[in-house]
Image (cartoon, rainbow, N blue to C red; front, side, top):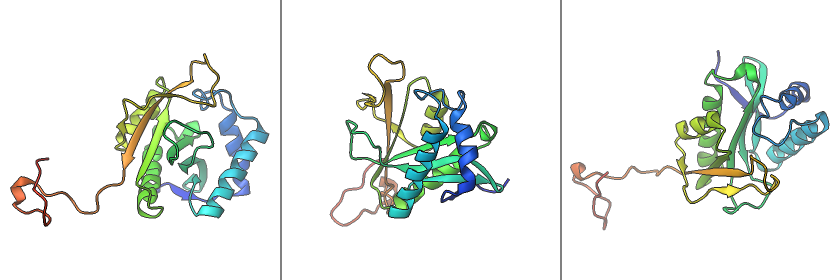
Length: 193
């Protein structure tokens, strides 16, 4: 298997994208599966965002086959920590458990820091979505224990309304010195790691 390719959306992605988003298992942690019209509207919105900004939520291709979507998104809803950019993913079931989400999401996060020049990227999900939580943590995001929130797009009283928040800051360009190194940037005391 070749590395996943993050790319702009094609018209040929419409059918597999619509099928993926109509699958109740794939959409388990969403309010409902998408209709074909909702899926098409979503592709148009994601394609337009990439055309306008040069980045966004990309189609993921594996060995020439549409596998899903992964990328960076500015949420449409006002969240308690807005403005923000989130990393998100959704793959067709046949691509689950193969390391594709980790590989492609790692690339999206790297692009966010290196090419988009973001200082921080967030990720959030519902507490029962353990698969996504494991991936978020594997990607090096830290849980913001004070950041849990009720998602404004989810109705009050719904079991999926509560979300947990993770954050990842842009890595330092220069590594911090350790006491063992005996050196420090001018005017700064070395710190223990």
